[in-house]
Amino acid sequence: MMAGMNTPILTVYGIPNCDTVKKAHSWLTTQGVAYIFHDFKKQGVPAALLPQWLAAVGWQTLVNRKGTTWRKLDEATRLAVVDDASATALMLANPSVIKRPVVVWGDGSISVGFDVDVFKAHL
Image 1 (cartoon, rainbow, N blue to C red):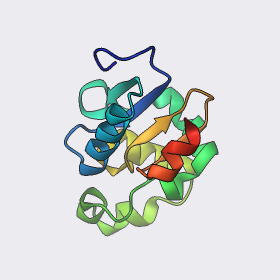
Image 2 (image 1 turned 45 degrees about the vertical axis):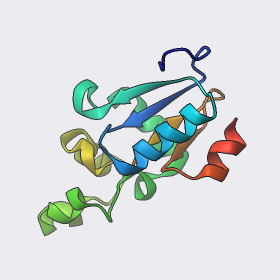
Image 3 (image 1 turned 90 degrees about the vertical axis):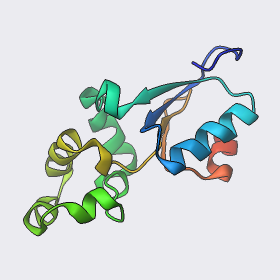
Image 4 (image 1 turned 30 degrees about the vertical axis):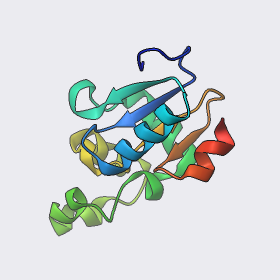
């Protein structure tokens, strides 16, 4: 939780050095929104939450197929990602392939990436 803020109402999942995560952090802090940050690199991918995330946004949204991590994967690995099960296996093995940030809002809804309008709508 960010120091000096109220009770957290959401959880932000990601990697701290990701530019998009930094933008989300900055915006939330500027708005005075309390949140918990879950670092994929230090705390791992929350495997128990992946089914919920996949149901909410789909593997096509959750797997960042435009990022460096995806591009570095061999073609066979990329072609093998065709459904929730194969996407889950990939995300657990390579957390950096998850599009960031994943935000679980106070109402339980989920968003992926940073969009000011989406963030405003959830607050």
